[in-house]
Length: 330
Ligand SMILES: Nc1ncnc2c1ncn2[C@@H]1O[C@H](COP(=O)(O)OP(=O)(O)OP(=O)(O)O)[C@@H](O)[C@H]1O
Ligand SMILES: [Mg+2]
Image 1 (tube, rainbow, N blue to C red):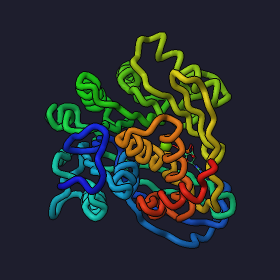
Image 2 (tube, rainbow, N blue to C red; image 1 turned 90 degrees about the horizontal axis):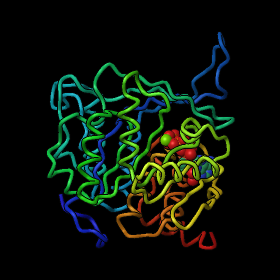
Image 3 (cartoon, rainbow, N blue to C red; image 1 turned 90 degrees about the vertical axis):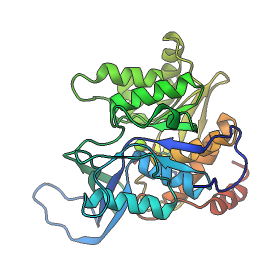
Image 4 (tube, rainbow, N blue to C red; image 1 turned 45 degrees about the vertical axis):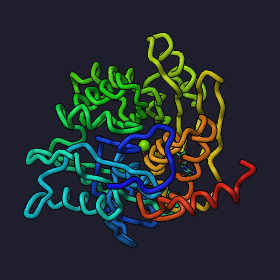
C-alpha cells in the first residue's frame, strides 16, 4: 500500500503500526442507564468496529497517514471467525494495511456491548472474549516492526507488546503507549511495568494515572509519572494524562501544562481516548512539538465526540484542519 500524503519527518514504509486491542462494538442507546431490575427501552442499536488500537489506527488512516495492524485476528478469511472478519473488513474499508497481521485459529477480537446513556452521555462498556487478543508473542518479524515511523501499543497481549516495544526502542523508533488497566492478570504485573519502561510517549487516561501513582489530581499524577520515568532511567519524551471533558495535562522537559478540551456539543465520548492516541501519533510523525501534538489530538477527539459510536465521528484531515483554523486562538 502506498503512503497517502505529505512527507513525514522520518521516512519509513509505514507511518504508524499498532498491535493491541481491536473490537466489534454493539452500541445500545438508552434514555438513561438502568437501575438493577429495571426494564428500559433501547432507542437504537448500532454495530461499529472499535478497540483502543483499532480506533486509533482508523484515525491515523483518516488523517491521511499509512497505518497498519500487526496484531492478531481470528481466522478471518472465508468461513472463519465472523467478528474478526468484521474487523478486517472495517480496516480494509478504512485503508488500514493488514499485510503483516497475524491470523490464528486461537485468536480473536473483543466483542463489546456499549450502553450509552443519552441523557448524561456516559457510556458503560461490557467487554468479552474467549480468545487470544492483541499482540502475538512472537510476531511480526523484527524488520516489520522496524519499518514504522511510530509504534502504537496498548496492554493487550503483553508479552508480544514488550517484545515489539524493545525492538522499536532499540531501533530509535518512538513508542506511543495507551495503557488503561491498573490491575493486569495475575503474573503479568512485571511485564506491564517493563512495557511501560519502553514507552517514551506515555499517554494514559486519568484512572490509570491515579491507579499508578495514588494521586488524585491529574497534574500531580502526570508529574509523578514523569519523575518516576527519570528515577527509573527511562528515556521518556512525554507524559500525557487525559481527563475527558476536562482536557489533559502534559509534561516533558519544559514542564507541566494543562490543555482544556475543545468545547463541542458532545453526543458520545466512546473512543475519544483512542482517537486522541491516533491523532497524537500522526502529529508525532509530522514532527509537531508536544503542545501542538496535544492540540491536534484534542481537536480530533472533540470532533469524534460530536457523532454517535466509536468511529463514525473520526474526522478526515480536511475537517480537522478546518476545525483547527476555526479555533485558532486555542
Ligand atoms: N466531552 C468532550 N468534549 C470535548 N473533548 C473531549 C470530550 N471527552 C473527551 N474529550 C477529549 O478526548 C480526550 C481523551 O478522552 P478521555 O480522557 O475520556 O479518554 P479515555 O478515558 O481513554 O476514553 P476511551 O478509552 O473511551 O477512548 C480528552 O483529553 C479530550 O481532549
Ligand atoms: Mg482510552
